[in-house]
Image (tube, rainbow, N blue to C red; front, side):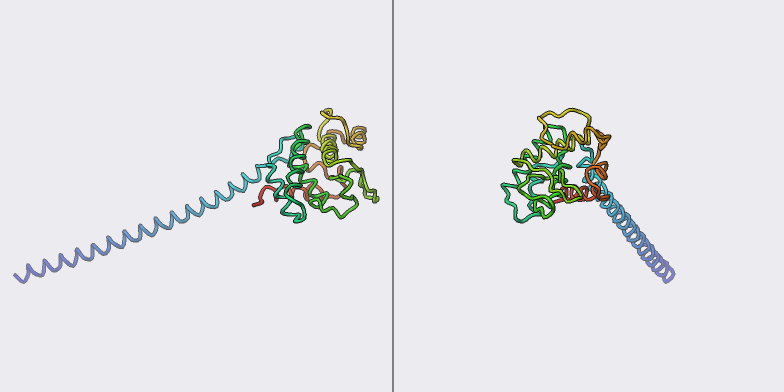
Length: 226
């Protein structure tokens, strides 16, 4: 009887030990699974971030002869975010004019608008060009201190800028009457049609070696505004 009791006791202890070992294995497997899932989730989040970033960069084009992607509301908001003195009505008007004038000549309005923001310090000016000139891209404002061209209205001033961009980016004819006083200067030079992208404007539109990079920064920022 005593032998039988001892055998039963040994069996019970063995089963308890076996159960503990099984529990530990289950816990360890659960921890490993959780760790793997956590790593996969982290990788997934990083991948999504990278994908979102790439997607964000692909939202606009650096080609000058291209269709712009920024909406009028985005352009207006970007302008107002950097110039607290400009009214929503005026900012909306500028955005609408840029979209319309660029569409007429097949110019990328994202680039034209970002260029205006760079040249005029978001319409705050302060350089050689006076706001009353309606010159939004420094046309004729050269390094020797020349004030540059003047235009009778915002629309004509933007049109001149757009036409000047087309002079550099294309050999095609203008779709509207030429109002850019320097269009023929480019036409007679070797620069006609030589600037297909924003980067190509450096050394042609302006002598600043960082000209295109500075505009690209504004272009990127316009697409990440809240």
